[in-house]
Length: 217
Image (cartoon, rainbow, N blue to C red):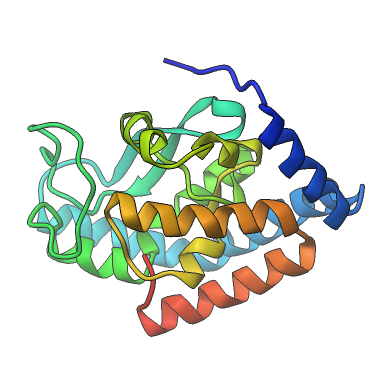
């Protein structure tokens, strides 16, 4: 089901605060950064895509790529792409958050999740325009239904495009609970309010640090 985004008074106040901190050129600069960096990363990581695909196929049966419905800008759902990091029937008992020592995650999956290699196919989502390189991470509706019961105005995060990485991902450790989601939501709101090209660049550089040190989500 797709939900129509109707901004509340709080949404509009936050949007007003965002406009005070961003220039009118920011959306165009951000899109240019998204396309340019995504194309460059695609070219640079093509050999890694091949190696990852072979490793996934050799370890477990099933597809190399994983497609899942996520909620993005203005609550519109889209298909997010990832390298498969779990066993083929990972959700036979229903949807649930992945945990650090989740038995559904394969050995290859543990490595590509820790290094975020599993997120590389989302560069295609960025080129399609469903996502940006930087923004709040997109969540599934089944989890959003629960989270918005505990986090007021949770859907405000859908006022911007979701990102491959974000301020919450480089500022907060791995989490898979409502309490963790509350902390990450605060970072997402901070990003929405103060987003800029400089902030996006800083988050991208911090993402490199997180990947190299094995921190984060």
